[in-house]
Image (cartoon, rainbow, N blue to C red; front, side, top):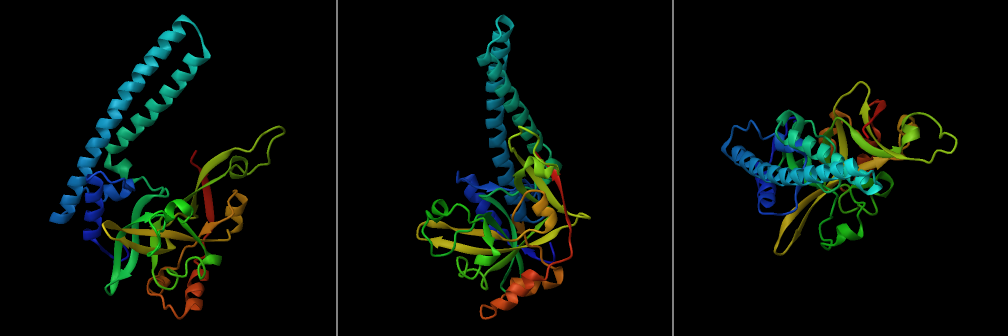
Amino acid sequence: MFGADVSIKEFFELYWLRAQGEKVSVLGGTDAAFKDAQGVDEQRIWQLVEQHHAKLRAGLRAELAKQEERLGAAELALSRKATKTAAESKRIASGKIATITERLAQLDNSDLLAAEERIFPGTYAPVMVWLDGRRQVLPMRYGCRPAGKPADYDTRFPGTYNARRDNLDAFWRGQFGHTHGVVVAAAFFENVPRHMAEGRPLLPGESPKSAVVAFRTSPPEDMLLACIWSRWSAPGQPDLLSFALITDEPPPEVLAAGHDRCVIPLRPENLDAWLNPDPKDLTGAYRLLDDRPPVTFSHTLVS
């Protein structure tokens, strides 16, 4: 990825924590990246991935059997007498069966797993940084807990997965100008009003409803999304690598689709300058954020 080395040590430690029962959510595409691993350490990571997937499959199949039983009971009840309770039970069971079946298919197909690209807050994703004189890719949690903050910081400030550009040298002063990173992404996802995503006004009597849309460049291409990151440490606890995507005012097409913030893509030629910030030159860092590639976003409804 852009000539960066993958920090196998950091990835192995993350997957090991997950194997020990820690609540670690990893992007499916990251799991799938180790499927055809060649090195011994990479193969050990894939073994941990397979063990985790086996546990997920067992739990999903048990839940699937439970929901199939619930569906059968609801259908039997409906065959005797139509009731709202039985109809609702059938609806819920049918929905859960569809979701579980889709997830099982994804776990059994590395191509489907690799296509999982939406990073939810709390999920680990690959982040490119500059360490030891070179570009490196480390796994980081989406949701930044700055170094030195208490462990409950995430609960007190749950919105730290995004860092507003107009607050970088205040709230994020410990990271901005010090620890910059980049997330390589083909899209970003947002919750927006459905009618705005569909490019229409609300109909008479219609209440606003939410929808999820995916924004991509037109034509589609990978983006280098600017972020800040931190390594949090505390006695007796594993280190936490975490990041926040930097956001700014949206371009007209994103605003028209119903969202009031937008991630910041960087020009590829500015990559190393961004990853190697000068703490004494924040103006230069802002200049890199403002020197954006001339991209236009289009959007598609996801749900």
